Image 1: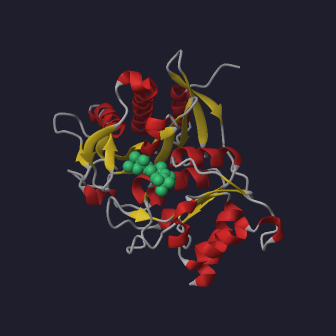
Image 2: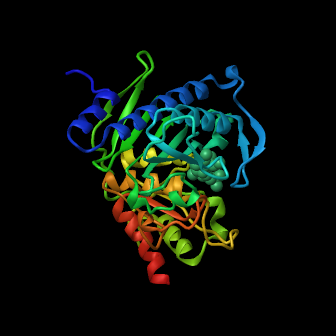
Image 3: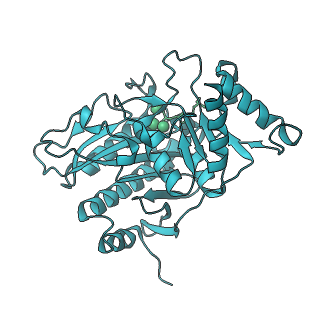
Length: 334
Ligand code: AHG
Ligand code: MN
Ligand code: MN
Ligand code: MN
């Protein structure tokens, strides 16, 4: 059987009427940008790309050199194709409309250029997360407000993981599919059609060092996980935490599990750590399209009407029955 490249997959989706030519081009361009980021990441110390950039971002985080390089690669690749109206990124204070010197298209692209950047210097998997929205009708010059659409409005979402192999996981609203980068041909090849997350799991992913700051329903839920077979849940749970959301979500898409980044009392705004527009929404769509669920512990992530570009939310996602269970602890407590 011949291999299905990302290019061929996208053309077949276009012929089936599920995506248009501009979206096909946009995803292909993001794929090429991710290939370039993958090359930069894999050079490691030999490429002079490790360490801090010496600057900060709007999130209040110290930027790594690769945060900045990856952001630049994505911006540059998407500027001139004519398919985009504007980009927004974790690493930029405000959105960046396509320069007037280039044709402007209908789509808005959001990205976390390098997710898990605390792991770069220790050579652990990192990734790029992206989300595509349509520019609101009649918008001449997109602004930050143009991006404030709920996750249900996403036209496409995906991530690229830079691990032992580089993979792109993509949805355009018709299932979640995985492509592996063939480093010899430079081509992404379809390696798993229709990823499915098992409905039940015995594995959870959480940063336990924040436990003392969690609210009561989180304490109760995790206590019952840790109680194992003898406790209320009647089964043993294993724990994994890579501290790259891309890598933790990739494991969950591959073999199930629940990923949690809850709100904790260090943050009086009750927002959580992860960003709605660049992390929670795209991952929420990918997970739902693979039969899983994504909530804030109380409501479906994709239903949230954002009120600002860099909004943060608590995240519970993965195996649907386990997400329902965690969500039940919160709802019963309220
Ligand atoms: P980013 O590197 O894009 O800023 O995101 C980091 C996020 C996410 O990838 C991960 O799940 C989480 O931060 C890790 O947080 P802790 O350092 O609290 O474990
Ligand atoms: Mn960051
Ligand atoms: Mn991130
Ligand atoms: Mn990031």
